[in-house]
Image (tube, rainbow, N blue to C red):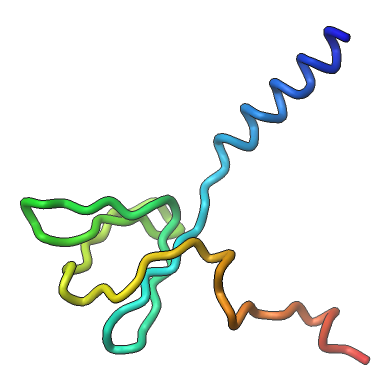
Length: 85
């Protein structure tokens, strides 16, 4: 029983450390992929986000239309194994 509880606890800690990707959809139709949830900065009037390399960037709030997790993307890319027939 202790092994199961320890295993589940370890799994929960591992899953909590994973970064979620977010899509920042812009008013001009573009999309920015952020790693981790973008945070609104009131002083700069924009959203601060990290790219895949861990660098911080800022996009103005007036440019942002929607911020949503990447799992909600309608146009998910398909792997080459799904396209072969």
